[in-house]
Length: 162
Image (cartoon, rainbow, N blue to C red; front, side, top):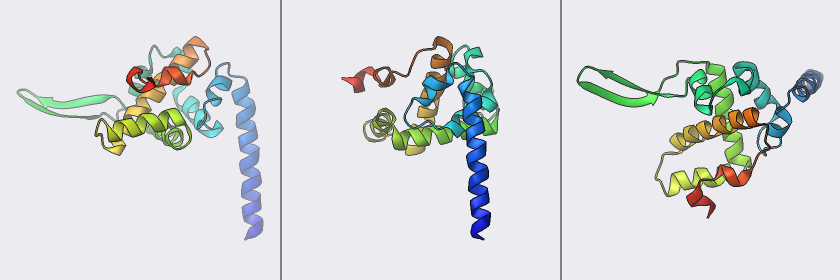
């Protein structure tokens, strides 16, 4: 039983090394990996599902590709509730969600934004996480398009930064 676990961990290490080697060839990947909380696996998953992030016009286009955009169920005079459309790539949604959860746990800026959303804006925790998924998508596309490094001071809203 122990030998099976060792084999699995060895195979996992080999796969992670191969993923790291592939990510080194992507120009903006190194700057994205510098964000505390973004792992090699999560970035590879996002890039694998979305493709070249610099091809997206805006982070909202990445959200739409993932199916994380808001849609309203309405018909005639009746207007429904705004919900996530889920008309996109489910694995991309999962990778964005998991990366956001990792950022909320490990990154001080995302922790502060999540705490602000929950405590002061009185959002439910999951709604705050979904809002931060959008923030992450905009950050990733912005970094890929501009080639700039991650700037934590630009992440926080103006009211929170002060």
